Image (cartoon, rainbow, N blue to C red; front, side, top):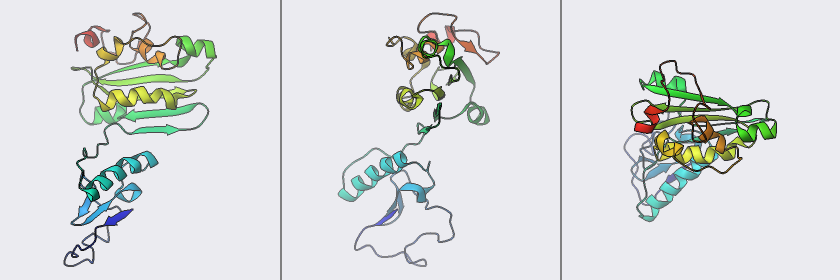
Length: 210
């Protein structure tokens, strides 16, 4: 969706000053496409989800009203596929992190090996966390299991706020819950409970010192 302010003169050339051959409308972090024109939603090509369009719409509304608003940010876009079990993710994947040159640690825990997963008899599901090795900052997460779209809320906040896993490890998690499985994955409920699939990772001391 594109919004044009009134009384704005069109740019020379194209009637509205946009590239008519482009697949998407290029916008800046304030959703401005060109002078007097803002765009939001799928037409921007930025993570095409309803919740992203709502995020963008608040920025456009603020611009039209002359109200200050933080710029658009897409590093913590949550994604949920409502299958059975649900598949939810936020931030960047392990493959994307490695391709971008990040030095990462990756922790994965089977949902059935968590307290709530065992009680729920969840036969399928995982919790996977991708963090920067040096700082412990959570870059991305994937959760597969019952209601994991709700579990993703906490992980989205952590990625958005760039929290280190050490801060998450020192939280108190409600017991027994599916979101508590995140704490179990990083050892918040006791050491030795997580399965680490990065062969170079040497335990929780990196998380504790971050």
